[in-house]
Image (cartoon, rainbow, N blue to C red; front, side):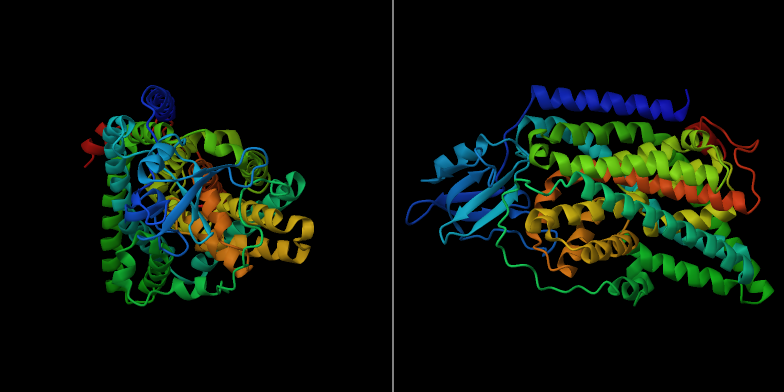
Length: 525
Ligand code: ASP
């Protein structure tokens, strides 16, 4: 059976099993905090775990609550006309009972005894029956992701070094680099502008009921975006190699290293090139092996995500999610296919078909970096692109070229600006958002939820309250899955266009539509 059908079938099975778990074994939400009766009524937090109220904030790294905080009431649907409900918490027993009735995944506000209100997203109770059943799937999904993560740094390093060194430095390097970056900038720009137009057309933030304090002090933390460029150069390459989040640094080093290999003497150049090419071959064998596991990994990942995600939390953010989703669909199904067709002269349908294993892996892992081994494999074996082009364009693209993330940043930030300021968000600021969204898409690491971390940075650069991003965090996962798919789709289209412009023939005789099997991988090792 063709690989993409196999993945799709397993993915569909994952959705069914996940939903069945959710319906049959639904578990209560968990506060992630232990409480005791407060001295003057209410409750006082005695212990925090690492989820719910104790989950560290993405922006500050600190949890929103602290041991010793006194809570006097739970507020549900805060700010939603006719739906807001305030439940005073007279004692610890009552508090636990109230939390038990809240739908998992909901954002809940807690009123503190000093009058302040803070929010937390309440996940499913880790001790519930549902969690117990999902656990084995979660475990296998984690194993699969660890395997993909293991490949990232060595794959990026060896593929860029061989790619750049193999170009022979000088002209080829400049030409390929120019085309690649030209494509990245063109498509990220188109993506951000699509987001801008849609968010202004649909206006999801105007009149939205998010329950955030509109009078909240606007941030004064000016983040320097130029910092992205500064962070690109590693202080210490070995510490960069030890973190998957530091891909830009690894790429920078690999580009330089590869380039300067071409400047060494013939003997050294040959030795180094042979060595890195050999390492890269091993990494590709490993990637091919990982590809054969994709259907099962995807199945477990989907079971986990579907079973643990409540549907109710999506309601207040429905228009926002729809706007992001529409942007991604337009960019992936209209803009990029047009670029592919008219700039590259390549059939979008045929190319999309060849890329399906990579796209489905991106969707289920929410990570461009983790998908990279599968992307390289699909582009070379199914698309027929040479290793010279793919090993240069793809690792770079997985970190630098994120069209889906650019759309997401643009829509998310303007959505929150619309919520806080209505129609007052000036055009010049909107254009600033477009620029920042493009930069954020370059700076975001290809890992799950990297986009939301960048959103905190944009919000603080614009002096908007960060609380809003914490709220949309609750619905980030499905959007992350979709935007990562767009990111990978754009990377692969770029590779095809660059390869074509270099005179390569796509879908040549050596390409296979069904992808290699485990047997191929094992037999040829
Ligand atoms: N998860 C995305 C990716 O890896 C990045 C993001 O969060 O936008 O492509």
